[in-house]
Length: 285
Image (cartoon, rainbow, N blue to C red; front, top):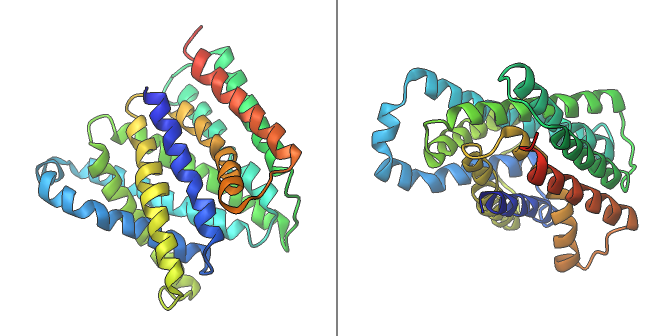
């Protein structure tokens, strides 16, 4: 049941591609709106129902949660900026290497073993994401810079996932995500200011799509991942997130009538197989 809920979180996250498609504001501005709105929506519950928990958090816990949000904001910034310099396919593949960062960190830092079938599932899922990315072979103006940023974005996402695993041992999902989204919003806002990108003044549709991302992709997406970190391994969470392009393709078909290329269908089947192998056999020796 928990694995099914996490899969539904991936479905929620996949709505971000649909919302971005309907928007015309800079992607980083949409990211700021997304995490800021999510944090604001959590405020009433956090300050009304969870004030006691907030007061009991140690300085170390506050710092870890804030750091997690910082790395989430860095992930968004590096990923979206990488798209300016390199092709979507290269960026997606490199960002998806998060699953390997997490798996090796769990192995060498946390001494958590992954079974042979677990590794097979990870490799199959990642291979499927590469096949999907091959459907878009666009180039860029500075490929090396873009690829480097995407790779760093994967590392930042891995740190965010691993910090979440630590924080969620005793911090509730709502309190943890409230601090994370607030810190992420602050991080992205600082980057927007440094880059000189206006934060406001865009068409109303952008605020509506950002609200959609805040609800579906953040509260019903990233928050579910954070919830799941208390019950499932970080490597499973990072692996199952690779199904997002599959769900996004299905949503594109249902909403925009876009029929995915055969290569996307093949890659999606490989991804689903990989997640099935991991979910079914990763804990078996």
